[in-house]
Image 1 (cartoon, rainbow, N blue to C red):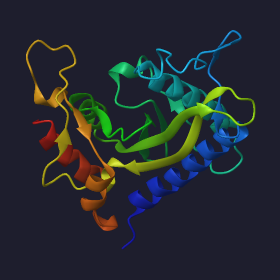
Image 2: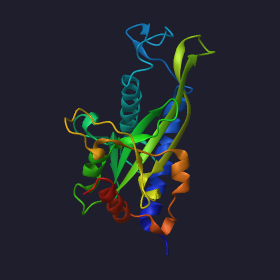
Image 3: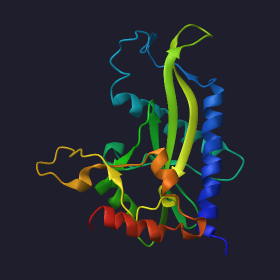
Length: 227
C-alpha cells in the first residue's frame, strides 16, 4: 500500500532542493557578503566567520529568495512563507502548506559537520501545536566554505552542495542524541538541549517508507521531550 503522506513530502523535498539549486546557480554558487562597498569577508581574520551570526545571514538570504522564487515558479505550487516573529524562538525558518500537511523547513548553514537540529522543547512545541494538522519537518543543509574566488579574487561564501532530510524518516524509538545547552534557564532541563542528527545516526535509524507518518514522529518526540 502506497504511503501517500511520504509521497507528498518526498515530492516537496525534490522541488525545494531544485528551487535552492537554481537560486544559487544564478550566482555561480559564489556569494559576496558586502555592506555598502566593503566585502565583510575580505580579511581572513574577520569576526563573522566564527560567529553564529553567519548562519543567520545565510538563512535570511535563502528564505528571502525562496519567498520570491516560489511565488513566481511555474511548476508545482509550493509557496514558501517565513515564520512569524524571530526564528531564534522557533525550530524552523519557513514553511509551506500542502493540501493537508504543513511542512516546517529548518535551514542549516553547515561549514563542518553541523549536526544540531533545534532545541528539543521548541521543536516539540512547534510540531505538536495544532495536532489535528499533519506536519513534516525538513532540515535543509547548505554546505559551504569560504575562500577566494578565481573570478575576481574576492573572498566569498561558496555553496559546495545542498542536502536535506525529514525528521519523519528517522527511528528515535531506541534513543536519541542531544547536546546539553541550557539556553539561559536557571535550572538545567535536558529538553532544552538541541536534538543532534549526524549522517551516520540517520543512516543507521532509517525507517521503512510504510512506517513514516506524522503520528509516529509525534509519539517519538513526546518521549524525547519527556511529555
